[in-house]
Length: 211
Image 1 (cartoon, rainbow, N blue to C red):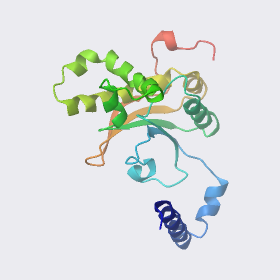
Image 2 (cartoon, rainbow, N blue to C red):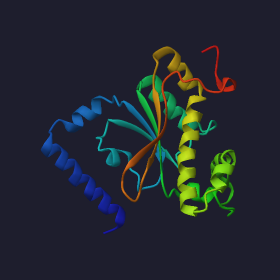
Image 3 (spheres, rainbow, N blue to C red):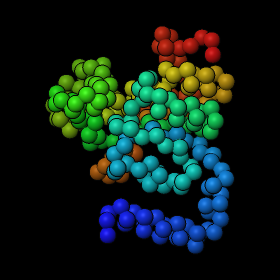
């Protein structure tokens, strides 16, 4: 049996189990999607949003990319953000990183990962540059990486607040609330590291005055 065939078999078993427990389970999912949360997480296969939060399909709207980045030119991320905020009307947006992140670790070195990955990782390097004094003072490579993971999450939450999508929603609906979390691969625990309530003021340079 090929490895991908095992996935299909597991899917059938999972679907049958769901129907046995609740015959209307898929009928409800097919007709409604009202998640309260948008999750912006890392693509790392060890950090599945639903499993680590104990939530069911339909409860979290998910976007994932390398190192859970919010980049102002990423149309994919921005389209997810706008759909979640404007149409799904989510109440909370969570940027969740994780300790031991490969993208973050890569950004701390000088290896050439070729053009596309270099472009992506450079955004994390920018976070390191902003916090160089604090990070360079940490002797342990692992602890420095962990701190950069936390700082990166904080910066990505700030990037959300800089978008007109979020600022418009804050002005007209007083939501969503923004959260920065970090997941521990070693213990499975999520650590809140940063948050912004709806309407929080940021640097005036980034605030729109005609939304």
